[in-house]
Image 1 (cartoon, rainbow, N blue to C red):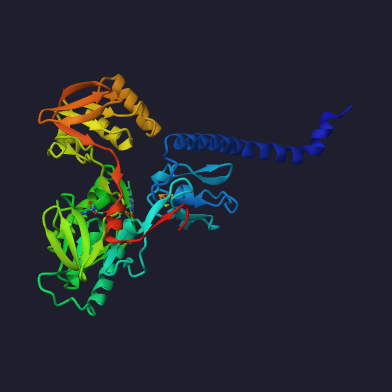
Image 2: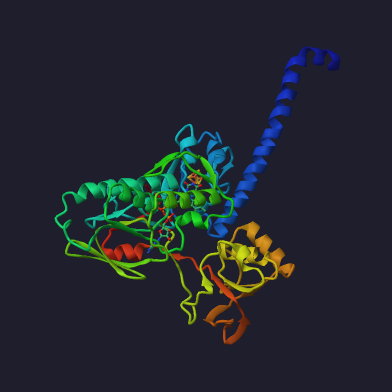
Length: 446
Ligand SMILES: Cc1cc2nc3c(=O)[nH]c(=O)nc-3n(C[C@H](O)[C@H](O)[C@H](O)COP(=O)(O)OP(=O)(O)OC[C@H]3O[C@@H](n4cnc5c(N)ncnc54)[C@H](O)[C@@H]3O)c2cc1C
Ligand code: SF4
């Protein structure tokens, strides 16, 4: 017979240690198990909706090296890109990565590398030399188009590219041609803005065209009040932009202030349609005119041109390809076209405006490519009759006061004031290929 009292007396210390260990470790193990389960579910959902495939740069985790510190997950400000599964980091939604590189920098053992594309989805990157020139002589690329995103990098690259151009210009035999610009800069996002300032500082005869009505590039389409993470950077002719975190709205205001203070001239609402090289001079066709220049600097980013519907009436000013200020569209009839997150988010933002009647038209059978939260919100909005969803429909014609939709053989005209099209973008590769720039497709490499 075991003497319980004696047994307890003799084994009190190891038993207490065991109980203490169980009490402290068990919650951690349970937490780990639940966390892994949750992240696995998110990964499965991302695969199902196509969000797991990268748009461009994204983190590749070497799980053989990963020690499970979780530093990358904490460092990443885009909360759905990385997660922990069984004490190791894994990518969830590679498509949501914006390329900060904070994850790779935070990893204590170097288990994360930022790469372009994946085995399944290749990403086209133009061939750019360290001085930002491409294989086409005197054609330069700066900013995200060259593969390296982020505001700070784009600002630095824009100014550095112009410095190289100024250097090269000194030895250029065509520099004495009249009526020819030294440089045409295409795009006024962070790279184009910094390049334009640097060109002014270095007194180049240069001109900048931007197809949108405002300066700012990709930042214009960030979600409202987004906290933008960046690092201090010098802006030519302006000084240091020292903030590490700034709201989208304040950053846009800062860009406007820079343009005003430096008296910068940027030709907005003027997109470049084509460029050809003729006798050492580029002929650049914009939506408004033809420009000649010795050097061409493309700062057009990677978002590409919004895909059009290609239907009669689309040229009308009531047709738009993004929604910046939903509150401008109260008391109207709006049609949103598309089946992705942007279309769904725009439709819901419009539906929140007082007096606005929103219809969401999508050619597919269901919204299979959107985030779970958006799907839930959309279903709720439809149940509450805040908007109307028309699946398997196509826009066939746009009129001044209505829009024609078809489903198979049937057609119907809906009263309409505005059409918002979210049909994805055509990457700028076609433009690059036509000017002769070499493009390499990357499948999960640098
Ligand atoms: C949702 C989201 C969040 C992000 N968050 C951050 C963040 O927190 N911190 C950070 O550092 N970075 C962030 N980024 C990345 C950052 O916005 C980009 O890396 C940066 O804007 C790239 O600058 P860019 O000047 O190269 O290109 P863009 O900003 O894309 O600008 C390109 C410009 O060229 C114009 N253009 C294109 N084609 C033509 C044409 N044919 N003719 C005339 N003009 C043309 C476009 O209209 C645009 O204005 C984020 C990106 C996204 C999408
Ligand atoms: S690069 Fe930036 S956005 Fe992408 S995973 Fe790393 S920290 Fe997140």
